[in-house]
Length: 578
Image (cartoon, rainbow, N blue to C red):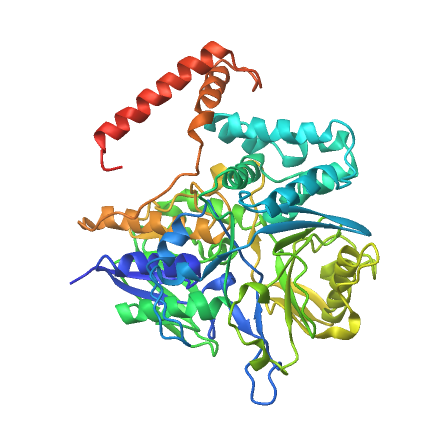
């Protein structure tokens, strides 16, 4: 009989683990808290009360998502999820992966002034070069002399620092300190310092780990410089339709038992192993589920209160999960549905001057043959999806933080910040009278008229937290962890990090069970071959206790390059099929 694995949590991590296990012959059961949806924070939703006249509900979401070019784990899984177009009946050759489409530009929208527009891909046409030219020579950034050079200097430092320095030094340095933000202009802070941390990782720049933020930033830069990579990809329809529901159907068809509406409330442990897990439905009915192995695929704030003394007796390091549970923040979405077509830009938008750290994307331009007239009241022509990453800074309309506002005030405040960002220089993109309706993520709970609770927060990578993060295995021999707080190459709370963590958990189950199933593939972050001499030189300096330095002697570059080529040739000889 195949070993049975019980997976607790049906988000991206849980579904990824189930996918890898069921394809390797394990028996798999998944227990998910939510009753209506799968996929955790990645899900799309049916907006309550939005349908009329026999139409379908408008599509909403916890927050929009994108798939950078450096994502390898989640996209590999997507290629193994079958998808057939419901209209044409034609099957995608690469499964739901083929439902990803490239966005071409990104915008930094600013209050009361023209935006900064940049390519989010390698230039492949004259029009692309014109965008770059305008960005460099026609845009007033507000940066002071020398600040653009400093940005380049900091990027180069990140790109050429050795991994040991990043992990040992940059992990303990806040992004604010690393970028020398205190000594520079508001424009520098908005475009470079806060622009990364508040919008990409939902963290405060003073506390965000330079290792994490820096690693992700340079991955995006490397993607931009590679003509073979699609840097910024989005789905071509509502997430449930073009990814998560087909995934769920595939898992169930393969034999996964997936039970919704079951919240994990207790781990049963005899101080040696997990003997069972108690789950509870919405009516309070409890039952115990048992398996040979258990994977906790719940987010850190859900797992932390379940760590009990018997578990700590066997693995004291699990107590770090309780500490990590404090490192979560609010990053939730609001969607605006407009009666006119407003695409704004062919890609993502960072509203750099907004106190609530807004990012946005106009989605229908990417959704191909999606017939939006069949949704809502039939008048919607734009779905403007917005993420709010700062819920603790007062806004421009009411002078209150998002956490102090009613839902109506949140809508008004976000709308006001968007208009101040988009309606500039006499050009009006957003009109009050064309706002049909809106939807605020249902994870935000309103009490006494105030948004007081967030039931699905986001882990943020603060300084000095890497050592607190557990591996995918534990000292309890049948308990494994698969969530974005697990140590991974990705090192970011993301779909990619969740999928990689799931693969690590599965690999450890394969090893502990004695299975002869193949291990899941893991990919490290990309480090360009041409930069190896610089990183090699920095590693030598780091071992000597010296700081990073931008100048690398020519002789060192030559020797290091020759050594790198030699090492590369050894790999090619060993694996000629590569």
